[in-house]
Length: 275
Ligand SMILES: C[S@@+](CC[C@H](N)C(=O)[O-])C[C@H]1O[C@@H](n2cnc3c(N)ncnc32)[C@H](O)[C@@H]1O
Picture 1 (cartoon, rainbow, N blue to C red):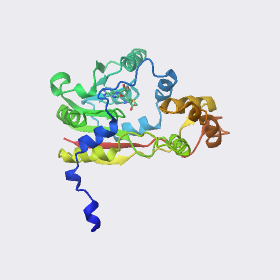
Picture 2: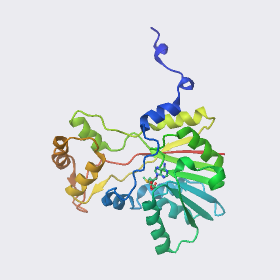
Picture 3: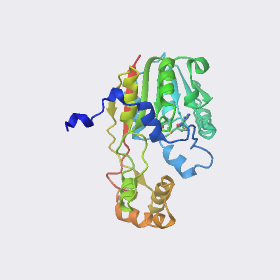
Picture 4: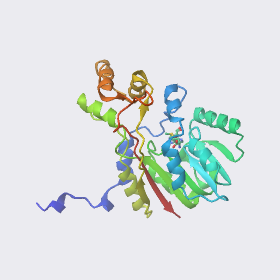
């Protein structure tokens, strides 16, 4: 058999379906609710290396209007707001938007508007058009991906920036799953999204963030709580193995007393295109 017989032409693949199959059967899953452990919000609320590097990569003008899809509590939104005329922060989670409102109030920010909506529902007709559309780490659960891309491409006048999760996230979690003979339930591969964009005639620039800092944990209990939250569908017996695993795989940094593993980094991928 010719080896080429096994290779499917990317044009013959239904990338929308491939992505949706990976996202799973739930069309509008809302993970970010008051039931999400508080500790998780506290950790993601930290403005860290990623946000600083992201803001440098966005092409923004002081007269621009920006739509920030999946703004969350606004760590990226507020940095964008410092550089442009106005930002509309859109998110489906009222809890995250409450945190954003607190940020706006406490910092006296006057150029951020808030819209509570699913990203999937945003169209030119209901949100209007913007110079720049940014969606930072908010696309991984979107099932109706093709229509959503088509709509946000219509909304943007100048640029679209999508930041998605790369394949090298959750190194420790993946290692733990391997040790118990299971496969870690990762997000959909970003190359599916890339291929979908190409199938729509959109040819994005693509780059990996080179993040130097690794994840740190205040103590072993902090690491346990944060790892356990992500480990759905584990048996009680498997959960009991997390603590010894953490002990073996994290070490205390003598400089700041935090626990870490140098390989435990975040991996983000930027896809952006000019209209
Ligand atoms: C990881 S946070 C990202 C926050 C911020 N953009 C950043 O990069 O720091 C993901 C945010 O996207 C929101 N989100 C996820 N899927 C969404 C959807 N389909 N519609 C609206 N918001 C969504 C969540 O509620 C959450 O606030």
